[in-house]
Image 1: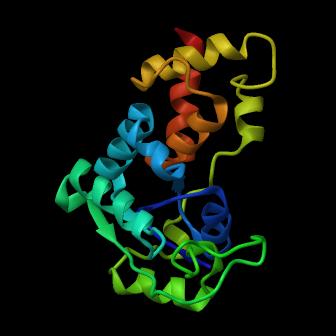
Image 2: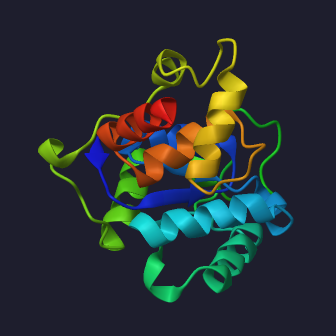
Length: 196
């Protein structure tokens, strides 16, 4: 598994699963064309792009290029890179029918092809020593931000401190803080909020 600095933006949840098996970084799902109407998700992607850069990895079909071009126009040029997978004829095993264009999406492309596409973009590979531990759902629970009485109020306090939307879920918060902060930073911020 490679560790990279940039966050990777993909189309769907199966793409997210595939990339998380190959690369240790934040992986963000656009929800396909839903990104066009989801201003909150786009704002989140912009903040992550400004903080660490993003890498767009969409399917090689027409829909993938529409999403890719939308993000190209929505994110400043120096903060976004594009990885391209080749058009490979076929269909994913979980699907009854192939795509309209008859090609594999990110989820169906062989691992080696995806890793090669990522390396071609010049991603910033991190040595193991520079890799921060990920904040988990268990951490959110231990810090009182999820699953305990009063966690909603505590989470809203943290969201205000991070200048994030107040209705952001614990899962979305987890994704965001893993993208822009390290474990110790978040722990200190939460401890500071508890004291105030």
